[in-house]
Length: 463
Ligand code: UGA
Image 1 (tube, rainbow, N blue to C red):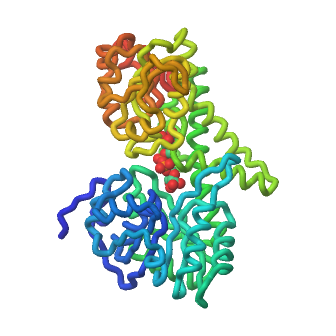
Image 2 (cartoon, rainbow, N blue to C red):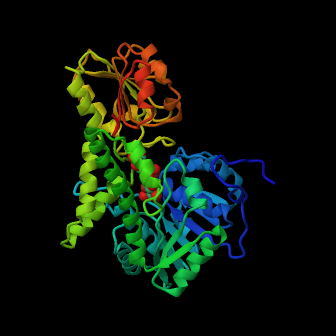
């Protein structure tokens, strides 16, 4: 029995498995999708080589360190080290692989479409390298029809006389719970256009012991967007209702609780707040909208989700502007910088929308985040209010605790519901701040408790 324990995993997921059909798998890209999938496939008995062009990342992983902040990942890398390899040498990884998973990024382009250049690069490398029949599995989120193009592209550039097929296997992991979401997924979607491809993916996933939904490649590609956009829509819907709740004197938390009991609605993803962020919902809503437009169709529901979210992200800032004459010379505490807890990822985080606005108004910001400050500092270096910076006369300082941010502050914004931030008690705001004025984008506190403790408290969808 191994002596590593995993915080997020059930007893069944703790132990590595051996499978009667272990495959040689290569994974292109070691971001959240690629690395977590690769490590989890090794945990389920396959031999996995993770490939990345970034030598620094590969060296880290060879030393047993994860280049991304993710619960349980490093422990799982260590437990399965004999079945895991990390390399920048894609030729070595691809040439004899049974299956090659592509998990590289598909970032948003200025027009909202997905940038497929990283996928194309990997596809070309595969075509020029593979020496035996193999299955290429696209895990990255790609517009419907991309798998067909990838297959044709590989065929066009294939050097050896072998058979390469492409399958779609979208990923449903969320950052912060990525390992658990992979090993204990609600379902695995496989999209194939042949029995052979389906059989290979079955061999990959049988040892996971999870429900497998086998569909065509195009349907699999669509399931990913449809699922993400539905969740984004659910959040925007709740935010829309929350804004109305405030106007009519209802409470969004009570409303969500009442709705959630209906299993047709479900109780998850009903939390109103400061809008969704991250590397997925904002990108995938825009990409599907773009795809629809390309086909001459207007995807009105998804468009609405995008519009509500854009407004929601700066709603509290706007409320604060109504309350205060100016932010110039005010000490502003910012609690939470990442788009959600459990990750150091800042992509599309509401903090990125609000902090430039506050700086432009001359605020002196004291920001606290348990893990996100270093990344934030790269975009917004610590500044002094003496010098006019890119965003005006404000300044930004990074502090090591919520208390340090709140000490003497005139106003506080809460952007992320980290445990360390939730641990701040209502009375602490009153005790530490110069004026206890709090704008909470995550509805962390009980409205009455904050009021009783003398805090002027604004949140989302509650009076
Ligand atoms: C999301 C999906 O949840 C995953 O299933 C999917 O695989 C992933 O995108 C992806 O496509 O790769 P992620 O972006 O990591 O995962 O994070 P979520 O936990 O879904 O949160 C996204 C945003 O929605 C966060 O900003 C969060 O604060 C916000 N949110 C979530 C709400 O505002 N309210 C809620 O009730 C839930």
